[in-house]
Amino acid sequence: MKILHIITGLGDGGAELTLYKICKYDSSNRHIVISLKDKGKYFSLLSKLGIEVYCLNMSFFSIYKLFFLVKKIKNLKPNVVQTWLAHADFLGGIAARLAGIKNIVWNVRYSNIEIAKSKISTILIIKILSRLSYFIPISIIIVSKRAKKFYEKKGYDKKKLKFIPNGYDLSILKINKTQRKFFNKKINLKKKIPLIGNVARYNPQKDHLNLLNALSIIRSKNINFFCVLVGSNINQNNVDLVSKIKKLNLSNHIKLLGRNDNILQVMNGLDLHVLSSCYGEGFPNVLAESMACGTPCITTDVGDSAFIVGKTGWIVPPKNPTRLSDAIEKAINEISSSRWKKRCVEARIKIKEKFSINKMLKSYNRVWFNVYKQNLKSN
Image (cartoon, rainbow, N blue to C red; front, side, top):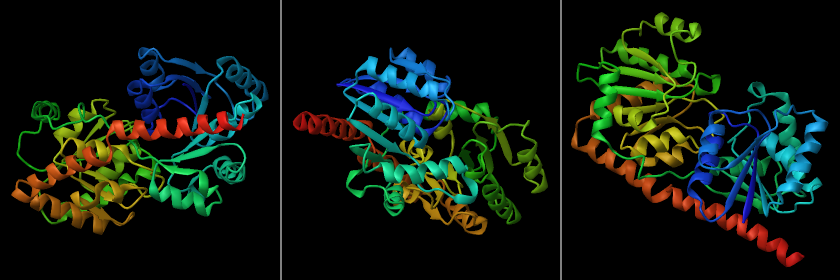
């Protein structure tokens, strides 16, 4: 089948990564991608795979670009249109219908929407999409169990919601001692002390201050550790972040590494990964990536984090640095013990059994085939 993916943008995000993996690993179908915005991180990566990629540089209210999108869909003649993220679900879904395509599948990534912290346009689109869910898509893929419950309450058509978690290539994401040595050498960690890490772009929903406050509590107890923060805008130029670290007297215990695309090396280098988000997560890739590399996780209870980590790590409430520090202390005390080694193995096994790339691809293919078959019968 020819699958046309319409996505809001191709920047550095979870939806974009999942789309890239589908295009890379799914040999059963031909994939074409349209980005409503401009080129991002995944434009060149998709192009290298030989995937046709079109970028429309579209604004939300661009009527001309909407009709250009309709024309492009007509010319491409896809068997199924798969849209990604709210704006693409809305514009892509409408454009596909105007192009005469019935086989439309939405992809919902948010686990919830916090009114005070979300754009008005996003909130409005979610409300509109809940109505349109009964008419435009034949199926709606949801990335997390928590999101499924949330969107059912928001009025989405319950019958169309299909839960498909993200999948991971365990031949790439694996325990690698060489990568661990490289990472330790890179950050110049000479002492054998627990290495904590947080991989997340600098954004309010990632709640770095929650982690910093928790680490401050750890330091007040004279517990030894070193922490690396990895992600976009995580560097010395980030005045806000640097000032918070200095204010909490953590400058000698934290290193800002910026963005690092070698996730295998980062996750193997850490002893413990901490996700400190306060809202907005769907199915956090960093948790599964860390666990696949045999690195246990502590996570706040956002999105499907608790579902991913389960008993292999620790789950704490969001916006609660005291509870987060307690979990970090417990983890540090357990490192190097036999229980810790068992925990590392269990973390990888869970990802292998529950969230493999093959399992995800089979689920997507099942949805696309059923959508295509359903309209073949009706015609």
